[in-house]
Length: 163
Image 1 (tube, helix red, strand yellow):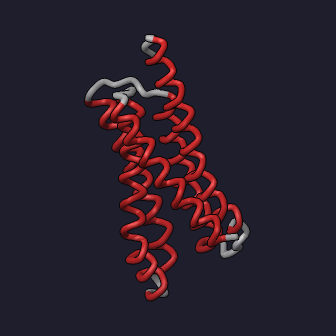
Image 2 (cartoon, rainbow, N blue to C red):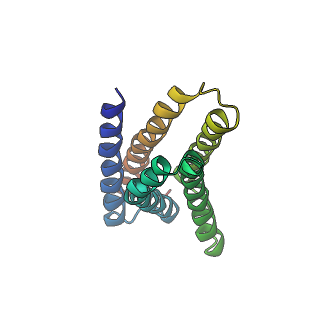
């Protein structure tokens, strides 16, 4: 199930990228496009550095697991900060999709920290299933939310209503 989930996760990530491209052509709301761009770039960056992080995590006993969880948590917090900072500097109100993506990043970061505490600090290993499938579920959830947002925005444009 794990390999299947990660394959599906990658396909949904590509789906999010395609939805972002469609949103650019339709010139949909800026707030959501900013958040989607950060989501796509953040996930692309995490995909690119994953082999390095995995190598460090498996080859360094002392640094290993700590490096894994803290790297992902740091990137996710930086993504939230990036979304917030762009919105604050340009005084753009956050859309519902933007808030959802920020919550997803925060949930992913929380899962990293909880799993770090579970595995490294308390050495209980109780949250392995939550970590394994929760991260994939959160990543996958962004696609239907983005598709819903895109459909509502396009429908509003066709009706001549600006949201």
